[in-house]
Length: 183
Ligand code: HEC
Figure 1 (cartoon, rainbow, N blue to C red):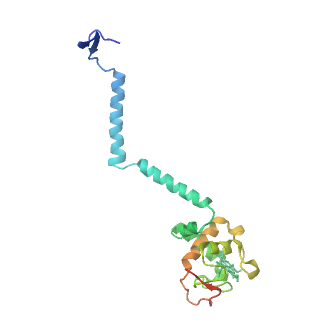
Figure 2 (cartoon, rainbow, N blue to C red):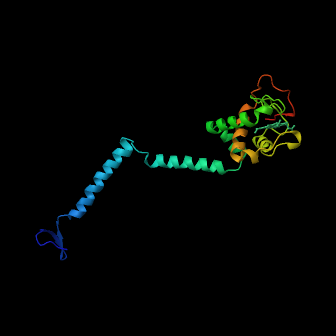
Figure 3 (tube, rainbow, N blue to C red):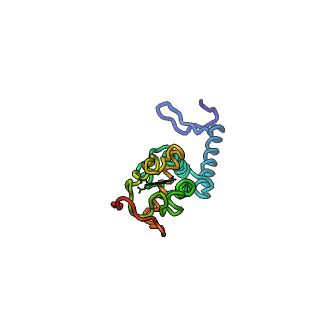
């Protein structure tokens, strides 16, 4: 599209170069993007008023990790990770007080059931060994199976809580039973 009024700046091989005014729609888009860009930069990078791309990514990753953990079958790694999660330990402690303290004592020092705070274990001291006896019980010996009643999440949480009781040697504890814990 050639504009009659715009001056010819340069001719080469019959091709004319004009200095046309940029169309207004084009200028409108240019100015809008510049203003938007400056606003965006100020909002997210200077004022840090919004979470920004990295923040949103981190939030979504954390949510994803949480969803994964709640669907993940128990493993030594997962149980040890739960030991570092205050929410899970808090819930595990609640589960223990409500369901286990009657037989194992409020500090885990042992009553009808064995002391869970000494270094001795009847069924093994590894996170998954403890998880197994909590989930499946030792029914013939008087330890109920808990997975059905409590569900997988609470069994994982209470197992993580037991891992924090290990070696606390609660006062007035029941005499050791089983084998000493091997490091
Ligand atoms: C009715 C009493 C009773 C209740 C309630 C009970 N336990 Fe036990 N628990 C026992 C007895 C008895 C044993 C010992 C089993 C054996 O001799 O093999 C035991 C063993 C255990 C062991 C294995 C200890 C070792 O030395 O290897 C763990 C871990 C355990 N209980 C955790 C729990 C948790 C967690 C709860 C609550 C969710 C719970 N118990 C509730 C009676 C109970």
